[in-house]
Amino acid sequence: MGFVRKKAYSLTKKAETLLPVLEQLCEWREKTAIVCKIVH
Image (cartoon, rainbow, N blue to C red):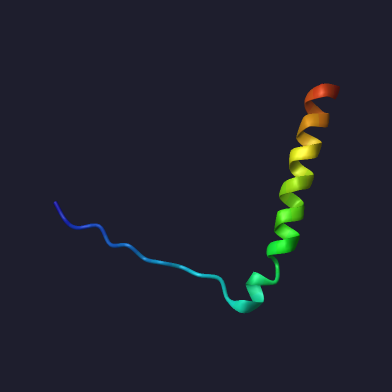
């Protein structure tokens, strides 16, 4: 067998500015998922 290569990735400063928006999308999804389960 071979060896496993690990690669670390990181966000650029510009990409980091999207984190608050992505967090809000996650919160919205959690709230709407609950509503969808109740409605359906």
